[in-house]
Length: 340
Image (cartoon, rainbow, N blue to C red; front, side, top):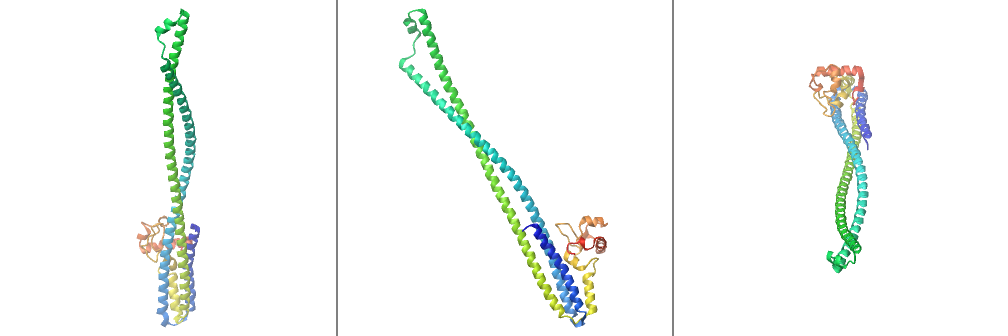
């Protein structure tokens, strides 16, 4: 169930308060020929109706506060899920990029290791050959040469062999260093990939928690709606009982009945009493912590200031509250109050 349904239930309850007042007027009119003997019973029923209206007003205020809190929580959950979804998308893209780079690096590492194996094999073969045949000495090279040209040629070959051996050893060392660097890069990429995977897992878990919280908020709203529907059904049933009982009290005098209705509709307040009962229960010091509305007429601070009110509505004298409420009623009528 959504916030619109909850608002509809609240509006239904406010309408029920107005319906209660209309039914009281009709029933009291039917009791116009009643005698004074039943007046006490009628007043008791009216008192019970006032108490019920006050209880309904308290339920309405509580429902509005709970609904506002649930809407704020739902908005925050939606914003958090949007942020986490962006983080998850970015993390997935980075994780895919790291995976591609890791695969390429591992492939390069395998190639370098193969080169290292070939270089080490060539070096080993050369060392074995040197061990088996030995290195020719300079003296043997001179004595075994028949002339200077042959000596020069053999000396050149000897230098080439020594340079080749040195180059081979250096190449083995270079490839070994490259393999070590590639291995370190692979380890670093693997660590980064693991870290991103952990962040992705945390983001997924947080999104699941946000969704669970939103579902819980929806369940609470549904429970609020069920409570309001039950309250409305009970109020309708009570109204039916009051109508039946008030019809039986036709002995009350018409004058007294009209006077009581007049007090209910006008009474000591500047606007109809049933609205005041619904808004604050008639408490001139009442304060709604959610909206800041205060006083018997539940006037919000901005409206209070607009009509020249001093200080806070709930702290002002009764006469000041009555005056400003009368001016608001003259300008806007019942549209200025939820319970009208």
